[in-house]
Every structure is written in C-alpha cells, then in structure tokens.
Image (tube, rainbow, N blue to C red):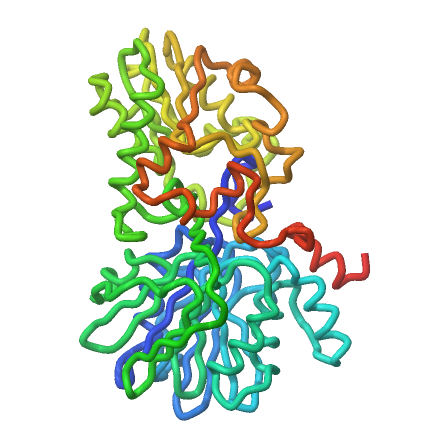
Length: 476
C-alpha cells in the first residue's frame, strides 16, 4: 500500500513525474527541485536528482516527498551543468529505498542517468536476459532495466543506443536522460505518457507537464512527439526519430485525472477539458437537484461545468485535508475505521435537506465512494445523485497507472444499477466515451482508452503485475 494511503484503496495512483535541465552556469539542481515540486502530484513515494559537470555525476535520492528528501546542503552539493529529476509512484517494483529514481549505469559514453515515467510490459523477459549476461541488478524496477539496456546497447552515440535498446522494449515510456554532455528526452512511439520541452533565459527544460515550466520561469516550446528523441547540448536542440511510426495513443486519464489542471496537453488546457466533461455530463444526465458538489480536488472543474450547463448552483460541501499525504505516521485501527473522514469533512449547513448532484472523476473499486455518500447523508443530504466524468473503468492498466486487477474493478463485475446500490446513491451516471472525446477535443483514435475499452495500443500478453519483478528477484 502507498505509505500515505488512507486505507480506502480506491484511488487511481499517479505514475511518475520527470524533469530535466540543460543550463550550464546556473543552479540546475535547484531548478530541478522546484520542477519536481510542481510535479509532486504525479508521484509521492520517492524523489531524486542527478547532476553532471565535467563528466562527474552526483545523485541524491530517497523515499519521501520532494521537500522531505532535499535540503539546502543537498542542493549545494549537487552542482552541475545538466540535471534530471524524478518523483516516483511505483507501478513496477515495490516501495523500497533502492527503487527510488532516477537510475544510473556506466556505459562506453560515460555514466548515464535515466528518469522514467511509464511501464515496460516485457520487463520480466528483459530482466532474465540482463541477468544471463551477468548484469548485477539491485532494484525491482523496470526503470533500472531500461537504464542498463540503454547503457549496454551498441552505438557510437546516445541516439544509436536508444534506438537499439528501446526497439526491444514494449510499453510506455517518457524519459529524461542525462549523459556527460547531453540532456535527452524520449517518448515511446505511441506517446502514451506526456513530455514537453521548455525554454528559459537559463537554458532548456524537459518536464512531464507544462505546469512545471511556469514554476521555474520557462515557457512551453512544444510537446515531445511520440517516437521522438530530442538531444540538447551546446548546439541547442536536435530531433531524431526513434524508429517506426506507431498510432498515437496518449493516456486519456491524463486529461481526466492525472495532469494538473493548469497544464496544456495536446494543445488543450486540462482545466477547461474537465469543465467540458461536466457540461457533457449535464447533457447526458440531467437531474432534478438543488446543488452540485464535487469530490475535491480533481472533480472540481467538472462540477463547475455541470453547474454552469444545468443551472444548478455549485457548492463546496466536502472539505479535503490536503496534508493527509504529508506524513509517514500510520493511522491506528480506530482511525482506519473512520476511512474517508481522514481525508474529507462534510458541511452540514450546506447539505441539510438538499438534493445533491455529486461529481467524481472515477469509481475504481467502490470502496471510497460509499463512505463519501454516507458522509453526505450523515450531514443531512436528502438525495445523492452521483455522476462520474469518465466512462466505467472495465480493464486494468499495464502502461503506467496503478489501478486494480480486472477482478477488483467494480464496473467489470457489476451493472450500473448494481453499483448504484452498492455505493448507496439514488442515481448513478457515467459520462459516455463519445462525450469524453468531445470534451477533450481529441479523436478517440489518438488516445489510449484501454482501461475503458480493453483495446490496448501495445501487446499485453507479456504484461506483468506490479510486483512480478519483485517476486522474481526474491525467487518466489
């Protein structure tokens, strides 16, 4: 379980945040620290920063939030011209100190350091191959495998190495790579995970999301294209194709849930896309109600959109404790039994006697939805109509999102009417797939919606669950 989890077990857990800086003569570690700080929502298990200067690499990483891992002494000791950083949520490999990113390996080009967001679904086969070649593996992550694959690949340049290594990796990967002379960005051929390029007076930036660029005083240049390698050095930025072209398939849940509302994805502001999801919900599921209430925080824009389109007043009736994830102290049994009340308090003065439209982004297992509904009813809500601004999640994700197995997904086992009864609402409605595509203004054939449709952009026959590498490592 996530070290900051409230025990409810119904969250969509973020993937990872990656960040890179090429800015000789500036404090690249400090820029990376604040870049990772802006990407903290993408991973809260560990953080790391690596820098290089004159071929010497320094790396600091450990479990914890960005602000817990680094202090002023750390940043003073991380002097360099190029930096990469990583904020991790484990989608492959457990929460162990050695699994913190980024990962480093020696190569014939010098030490390379890799920050990885995504999931390699043929990781078990690659691990067996590296072990057979005598590589000493010290973690249970696919990120370490990627790093060794790149470092050991034939090639006179980092571009040649990447083409040979990544051509054998199946899955999702956005990479920020540090070499002795370059900052390198890569996206997999489908572009499943995001990565963008920024420019500032100091130099060049790579980031998972554009929100991190503004934090460090950079402006968005463009997104790294699917199947593109960008190499940044003293000559500026050069672009190279990774390999064969593949259909675009960016994860649609970046728009629904993962990305920060102020980020730009595929030319669309995430906040506005989520508002349009709420507007589409109002068209598809009109309700006779008194107030529209979001489950904070990610459902707030959709609730605003629903209220605007329906004419039903918007109301903040659930107050979220935004600091619940900032401690390693685990709740005792009494506190665990209180469940979502560790995260949310309800406002009786807002809810008393009201017919509530409750807007949420997803229902995964249903274990959080029912307590939230009970919390609203206990605070006086007369009716609860729950609307979800995404279609039902029917299939697991193998490409960088820690979601659930198919057996655990409530929508894979129950009808909508049955789910409504389980979570205790008067009405339950989901946004249609067509309504979602209209809201994000991106054709469905350019998005990965596999968890909604079961149609994966890469072969998943070889996909392993989250802890498979760990079990193999200990011989289980």
